[in-house]
Every structure is written in C-alpha cells, then in structure tokens.
Image 1 (cartoon, rainbow, N blue to C red):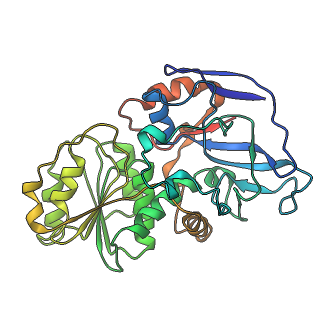
Image 2 (cartoon, rainbow, N blue to C red):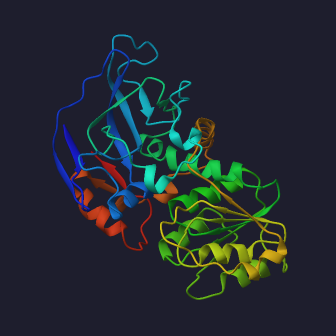
Length: 338
C-alpha cells in the first residue's frame, strides 16, 4: 500500500509498504480521507516525529478486514478513526499521566496511522459513521470534538457572549459549537479574508481584522464596555493570549485552545485586577466525539464550511502541503485523499 513515511528532518517519502494484516482482535480500515492536524504539522516542523512513522489521526474509512475474534464490526462498515472508550489500563497518557508533557511525550509512538491507504485499529477505537454524514465530514470529527471539548470545558453559559481569536479550522468549529451551546453573540478576530468570510457565513456577529483594528476595543465596544464573557484563543501566536486576557470581561474566562510551541508575551498587570481566569483545553474525550457526530447529523455543525475544493490533496503532495503549513496560512482545512 502507499504511505507517507516520515524520514526525519522535515521530510516525507511516499512509498509502498506492506499492507497490514489484522490480528485476531484487530480491524483493518481502508482510509477514505485524513485531515491534516496542527499537531502533525508541529511534529514535522519541530522534527519530533520518529523517523519511519506514518502520521495522520483525523480520518474516516471503511472496514476492509476483521480478525477472527472481532464480532462488533463487519466488512463494509463506515467508521471514523477514534472516539471509542479505551478499556481500563489502555487510557492514553494525555488522560492519566500525572506529569504529561505534550512537547516531550506527545509523539512517542510507532504505529502506522492514516497518511496511508490502510491502517489497523483495535475494535474499541473507532465510532460508526452515521447515515447522512459524508466521509469527508467524518474525517473532521476529531477537530470537531476538540472544539466541543473546549466549549464544554469552558465557563460558557446559555446567553453568554463569546470572543474567538483565530478563525482557522478549530476557531470556526468553536464558533459553531459555542452557538450550539447557547452563546448569544460571537465575535471573531481573523486577518485572512477567506477565513473571515467563513466566520461571517457561519453567523459571527462581528468579524475584526487585527491588522486593521484593535480587537480588544472592538469586542469591548460590542459588549457595551464590558467584554465577552468567554474568550477562546484559537491562534496561540504573538500576543493573542495577552490580547484575550485584556479582552474578556471582569471575572470572565479565557480558554487556550491553540497549542503554542514558543513563548507568548503577557503583561499580567494590565488584566489581573479584573480577576479573570485562564483555562487550557486539551484534545477531546469520547463523549465529545459522540456530541460532535450528533451536531453534524442535525446540521448544527458544518465541516463543509471549513473546506473548499482546494482543501483536498492527494497523498503524493503531502510534502509540499506540510511545507506550506509551516508558515502563516490563509487556507482552511486541508484533507488528504490516500
């Protein structure tokens, strides 16, 4: 089968490798689509992925073969590549390790994932892709679950106003999840025209260009001088975290959803007297995947809004895609078709 094998030093090689064979308690999934996640870009950019690794964890596919002891799946079932509840003792380190550090521990794995034509899974790992949800949308259930998790973890209450800094794929998904959770108004900061337009189409009440206006002033004015109740930093660059803390209302909460790999400057004296709170959101849990799928089924969350025809690329172009994503980009979600 074809696979994009990481070679180290920011280099993929697309080549033929052996198609895996499921063991007695495994399933083989033929990958339909695999979204390019920011964490994979980080692994590439900072060269922390192991040479020989096949990355890619945002995917949808079809069960192609099952092991002899598998009873819950059959060949032809449509699945998404995660969301299942791990058995006791197999929980990921992100959930159970008392001192988990993503930068130093996040890429220590050797399994073949979904930048390939096929991938092996344990029977508990995937979720069934519901009727009415196309496979390209199912491939983005993982980032949708990340947005759902961030909203559920935050202090957002019915009727609250929300600020979102950064309208990349996660920011646009957070916008929709916040609406589904009952946000009364949503204000977005985004300099890229295509992303800003996508935020408007999704119903943002105000979209500000941080290169042309003061985001804090704009959001504070839009809330009658108070500031949004909750602000989500989905950019994690330059001064966005400090900007979020300056923007949120007195006693409000900032939730950091982006994953900054470099120091972010903050000046706490500007905002600490308002007794604002900072929370971090990491990944998602199985219940978030199920909620995300339900939102997709009901139309409350649209992944089509974060994709265009240019979003879909063949596996052979993965090197140029990752090189482009290392730099600031105006692109929406990128999806690989093996």
